[in-house]
Length: 145
Length: 145
Length: 145
Length: 145
Image (cartoon, rainbow over the protein chains, first blue to last red):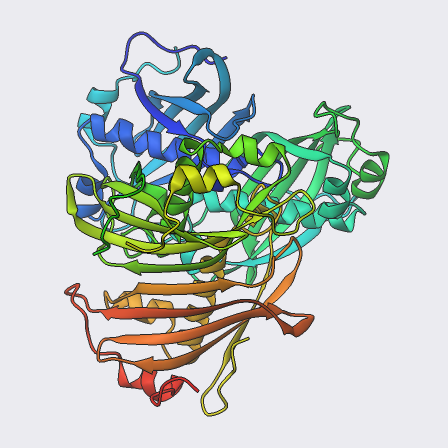
């Protein structure tokens, strides 16, 4: 179970498992979790002052370069899930985000946990510095809690 | 760059980047790689004597419990990719597979590499032993090369 | 613009356009609308007394056999959409549902409209009668308004 | 069963039903057919001299404004499908394409048929004339066979 830090904001997003996200084993396919995690990351960025439109209008991109996901419990149809997102650290052009999915109705039960490294890419398609506003808003300079 | 082992079979699968797999950054979305990797794993299992139908007919499942992916290069529309899949090791009820995506036309260029842990689940929805035929066919008992 | 009937229930579902649903043209890909429509149909069925689990537990299925969609306006990231679903008629083993997507903040603007024919399939994989409870709950025996 | 015209080219594309395209009913979800159809349309356009890159490099778009699909047979895992695409007619800024999916191993059996209307959109995001080269290459000015 991931430990949430107490010294930086934690963005929370609710998703519901939908019928078309199930695979033939009757649970959400593991690739679908990456969709939920991406959705939650863009919500976290929007709350930090960088809504998606502000990013794409400038021709910027945010490219995932590494992802680790541990799938702990099955997510079944109709289940409501809570996705928590926070910053775990930065390099010059990339940020490391931690994410945790729990059951909405029982947030002590972890469904999945993830660590995602994403690079900020400028309009010239080259890595750019992580905007200082992002670092200030998300916190987490000190690294993992 | 992942090193391919020489003491066990390497299953190869070709995929082409399709228009609907692109995101608004114009490249294949990172979640789509998990679809390709899954497709390639089921091809590897089929070649090892376990086509998907043989698995689901028995009520079995193969659940991914952990995935790590490093995204090294962008995959753009129309690109043909080669996915290589091999076994890296086993525990009683799970297998660890290594996967590598390279450009079909330039297989020395790595597009992504992944390690995927998957649990075999029986008709009773409990973990079951990895079938010995799978271990024999995929090899890799000794662990990473 | 579809006219909503006044003699039968209209089920409403809210969806938000998510980043991974965009294609390289920067708007929701047309196939994604089918996901939203499916999600809204299962909500409508659940409200009519047939949650998905009650359907699949019996080994039943609901198979789409025909879909018509008119795409009227683009759905862009972050947009909140309202999906309306109602019954338009029945045959012995199938139902015809009408669906309309509008902007949540401006429900007079139609984003898309659809007509979906779906067959009820029994545990023996053969078409079965539409459950009378569904007809009673959804109404619409009389056909289009 | 759609009748194929004999006076214009028919573009054919092969797809294989993949594990992640199945839904909990064990067959390809109906929304997935739209992905296959889109893939086949872009192949048809590429063969007509308009590869996707040539379209997007100019800032153009091709937006689906209407789709009709009849689902005739289930597509199950591992099934190889043949998608046929041809032009059925044009208006000034849009084209109407007919598409048919059949089993690769038994092309007399129809899996689905579709009619898709798509508008060409210029760099200014306004409808533009369908390029004359497209009309010449795809044919079908005369309408349905």
